[in-house]
Every structure is written in C-alpha cells, then in structure tokens.
Length: 269
Image (cartoon, rainbow, N blue to C red; front, top):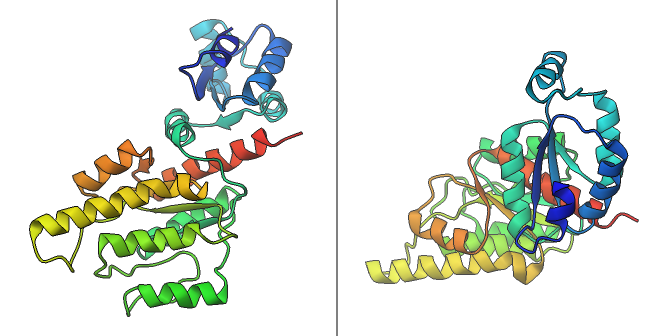
C-alpha cells in the first residue's frame, strides 16, 4: 500500500523501505516492479539471521521467510537491497540529487591511503576503476604538484599546495573523459594561494565551489564526495548544489553503488 501510494506522490523521489515480512508477496512483487521503473526503491529487510527472524515474530508477528527467496524477489522487482539501516539513508541522499551514470567506470581522487581504501571498497562492490589513458595521465600530471605520483586512477594530490580552483579543474577534467562515468573525490579544500587579499581569496574559493557543484549537470555524471577537512563555505555551496557528502571511503563507495545499481535497474528490459 505504501509503495502504491508513493509511486504517484509528486513530493517523493526516492523510497527507503524497512520491512519484516508481508502477507501478499505476489502483490508486493508486482507493485514493486512497477514502482522501481519510476523511482528508486531501497529496501532493508529485518530478520535476516535466525535470532533476527525470531525477533520479527515477536515484534510484528511476521514470519521472516527464506532470505534467499526475498533476495530473488528484490532482483526481479528491481529493488536495491541493503543490509544496514544507515545504508538506506546514505544511498537515498545520492539518488535524490545526482544524475545516473551510463556505466560503472569510476574515477577516484584521494590522498594516499584514502584513495586506495576507496578503490578497494568500489572493487568489493563490483564497480570498475579503470586506468587512465596514457595521454590523459600526462595531461593530469602537468596540473598536479611536482611531487605527486603519475595519476593512474586514483589521482593522488599528495597533500600538495593546490588552489581550490586547481583541484576543481582536475575534477572537471576527469568528468570530461568518455570512459569515466562518475567521480568520487574529497570536498575541495578552501585555499587560494595566488590571490593577494582575503576578499580575493574568498571570491576565488566561492567561484571554484560553484564550478564544482555544476559539474554533474554539465557532464551528466554523478559526483560523490568525502568530507576531509572541509570548509564551511565550500560545504554550504555543495549542499545547495545537491552534492552528497560522506564521512568515509566505504560510505562514498556505497553511495556510488546505489547510483550504478539503479542505472542498471532503470535500463532493464
């Protein structure tokens, strides 16, 4: 009943659903299949474990049922199934505001181990992190700090002294690559070493943050960010622009996986 109602609710763009069981399984499958063609549906089912199933029986008198059967229902209906409560919300945030990628080839920007951790989390979710083309590596290397390694994917700024605008230009360059479908990066730092006055530095940072926030719409590619020492000014501009921001590499990877998974669901026959 909730799914059928929310399908036609103009104020609802993403549905995050928690359930423990159902009395009309076939109807749920039919309604969910139709709804998922119009709006993303993320679902967390309680009672996956034996103790959890016992708890659902006492909570809502629901028989949890065979988990593998429900997993098959989710695949048939085009539902994005998650295993943790917080995943409902971090995935919904990305799906609310970002364009759907054409594929699952993701570029990563991060300092050192952060970038490696992001790549590992993407790989664990079955998402590709393709190596950049040779000429693209050379072009990117020219705008990175001299001590930064050759960017293969991920791109490592190597804690270099870069202006906000320089960081954003790197992100936009990645968005222009035909073989990249989405980007995970840090929230750009608030820095402008080339401006002489405080007012000029502030203006340069705001201009760069505005440019960053427009990249997803300009290129039709999603951007997911990690809040690593962010400034209030940049965070506010990105929030207004609908750029999702998370705390860890794992959260960023999960958010991007929601976008790639729903893109496949949306395009299914």
